[in-house]
Image 1 (cartoon, helix red, strand yellow):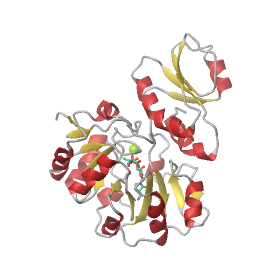
Image 2: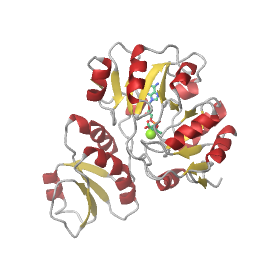
Image 3: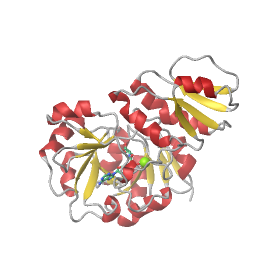
Image 4: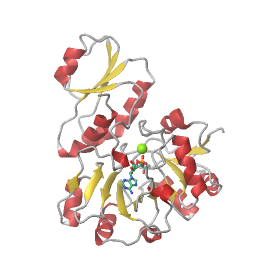
Amino acid sequence: MKTKILKSSQIDEAVSFLRNGELVALPTETVYGLAADATNEEAVSKIFSAKGRPSDHPLIVHLDSFAKVIDWVEEIPDSAKKLADSFWPGPLTLIFRRKKTVSYLITGGLETIALRIPKHPIALRVIEKLGTAVAAPSANAHKRTSPTKPEHVLKTLSGKIAAIIDGGGCSIGLESTIIDITRTTPIILRPGAITALMIEPVLNIEIQEQLEHQEKVPGNMQAHYQPEKPLFLLSIEEIKRRIKQENNVAIMHYSDITRRKNATHYKMPKDKTEYARVLYETLYSIDSTHVDKIFVEKPPFRNEWLDINDRLHKASSK
Ligand code: TXA
Ligand code: MG
């Protein structure tokens, strides 16, 4: 199959592919998603084969309005209304108890379901015109880096999906925060742009963050988000020491260091939001060069950098 590249004005074409049970990659504010009509089981199953994704790995269902939440969940807790009021549309995914009619294909066999209303005009228009909802994981082959530009999607999914809508770069650049609100104490399963510090005042309760790797939560697999080149997370001192013995490395650093001829330097932003926006793009650029490895300066270990630390940790070769 040849993957068709659609302009942002070709929403109707994208919608007709989705209606015909085909897959369409589309931009969201976080990363590109690989969309299928969430009410069409055969279409949803294509997501797993295109990505090479294990079938027990649940998908996020994307909606265009809060009114549609009730089609997917058993009940809407108060916390969901509060979080939706504050953060939807936006980079927050909520875990609910699934409605009994929702396919296990979407939930990976779980009794819960992940929902999000994205804040991107293209994604919203596609869902609205389709009239249902779209199941959409990040639009990359399983375990690989999430795409923030159309060319990243083509790198691992070209020929495997019907179309991609070119919406340029994603403004946030990291996947959404995932929060499980089915428990008495809500817990963040995947950190993102919406932090615990932002959520706590909305729910008036202390939020837990799952820092340890847990097999039970498929999103928390240890090896994930990986670039092709081996990536090493090092302090700036370790980088300075290691590059004396290395000849062909890429260095991603935000501290100032003397540039070396035997390394390619990628100066990263010191601002967290900017860093998040360019992180995956930088990894994709490095992957298209001939360096042997990537040295990444460990980002600050402060709360607001939690999502970046999490993704880099999972992207690194141990
Ligand atoms: O920003 C994002 O969330 C992007 C855009 C496209 O919306 N999507 C995304 O999807 O990152 P994906 O499939 O690459 O990651 C979603 C994660 C998975 O790791 C999955 O394990 C977790 O969400 N997830 C989905 N349903 C879940 C559930 N019921 N319980 C726990 N985790 C769940
Ligand atoms: Mg993903």
